Each structure stands twice: as structure tokens, then as C-alpha cells.
Length: 185
Image (cartoon, rainbow, N blue to C red):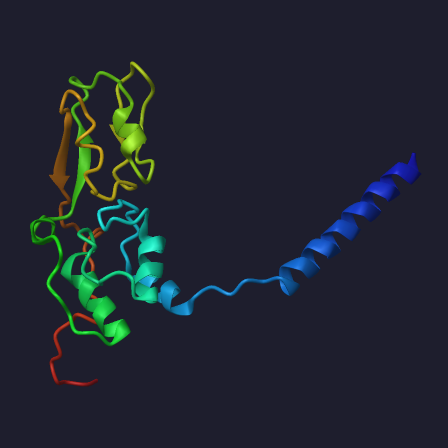
């Protein structure tokens, strides 16, 4: 009875050591610039920049394959922060219409929802809950306001509601975009 337990424990230890050594020996370093760029992006994973998510867009910017002005959810604030990080001149946003929109979250009119699940499939951050033939709802804390759920909805029961400024949602301007006052403390 003890021999099988010791054998399994020994194998587990051996495999653990092999995995630990492999993780150190074959470690792949990430691109630190892409990591910094990714940290500045809003992480909406919406694809409005024509990339599959924020990380692929960050890697494209770091490689010089994409401009810094293609993120509508991040808007001008993110574009300016990226310009400062990369030492580039700020450039106008690619999609000016999206830049003018206030931050919003999706809201499903429950009485009109037919439970088709098309909005659930379109949501890149899984912020919509529901089942087939049942009413759906949006987890507002998870919704990034990307509006990708709007086009597939056959009954147009999804509205975008602006986010109210409350003490819990208000943020100071980014230090990279705050106006310089000339006063140093």
C-alpha cells in the first residue's frame, strides 16, 4: 500500500522538477514596450482598431505596424499617453465620431428581448448573461461600452446608456495628460 503512494509522490516530484527547470531554461521574454503600450490601452477587447484585442494592437504599435490613433474607446487621452510613451507627435484620432461619444454601457430592454443569444456571442468581454429563449441582462461592471452587441440584435432591444459620474466612477485625469500648472510641490 505504501509503495504505490511513494511511487506516485516520487513521479510527481520528478515531473515538478522537470517542469520547473523547463520554465526557467526555455523562458520566452515578452516585449517590454508592448507591455507598456498594452497597459495604457483600455482593455475593451472590442476590435474597433481592426485587431483582435488590445494586446495584438499593442504588439502592432510596438512593431511599427499600426498608428497610435486607432482606439476609439481609449480616445484622445490614450492616444496622447501613447504618443508620450513612444516619443511621437500626437495625431488626430482615426475615428473622430467615436471619440466624441461619452462612455456608456449596454442596457437590454427586458420586455423586448427574445433570447436569441446573438448579443452574448458578439460581446468580447462576456458582459452579457442569459440563455436561449430567455431574457438577457448586462453585467454593467464588466461592460466596456464597445457597442459590438448592437448590430446583431434582431429586435434592437439594446440601448447604450451614458455612465453617470459618481464618486465611485470619477477618475483624476491621467498624469500624462494633466495640464502643466508650472507649480511644483
